[in-house]
Image (spheres, rainbow, N blue to C red):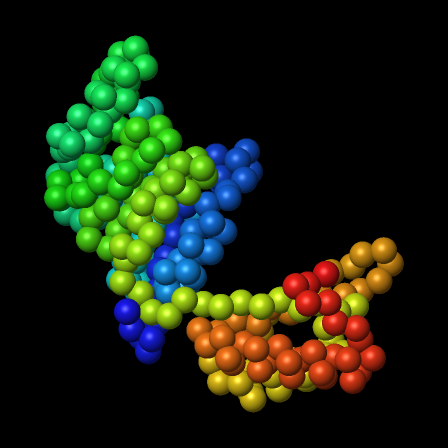
Length: 253
């Protein structure tokens, strides 16, 4: 583990259903949260349609910029599940029926008395040279090839795949976050927040305003890889907010 280097990642969300608004994405948040614990920062997210060339272009763009790339969606049994083909094209390799993936699917479906059809067998296809990410939820494995991770679109299946990858990726120090809240317009404490970041190198403060019950307030999330720096910044902000006449709620409002 390296505490100095900042490891980065991108997420490529694949699917017309996301772009149409028919399905609301939940994978971005859970991948981002998981990456923080692994000591990896999510730096970019792209959402692309089920069009092979657009997936290839987006994938090649983010692969060149970040240490890790995660894709979600498009690895099922139907004709529009084209992620595997697009990934293989981007990497310049062929597509194979992975023997281990096939065996996993055979065991999964035979154990349930279900036929392994040609459509279901599509979920055993991987780019040549890929490894598998275990999927205890539905049998069909995820795919790892180098620093590229091809995940399911269904959030609870992706969660299981992330769990299988926990501790397997090289990263830096985990990101620590602490939230405080106050019934204060963020415009009135902007200088205090700015000073908090200036006085505590390596700390980033996020300000998230809200309007409830006819009142304006904000939650402030203090983030750093240093627990001591987070604690010191929280203490400074709390004192500053209280001095300005705003009661502070630890954990946020």
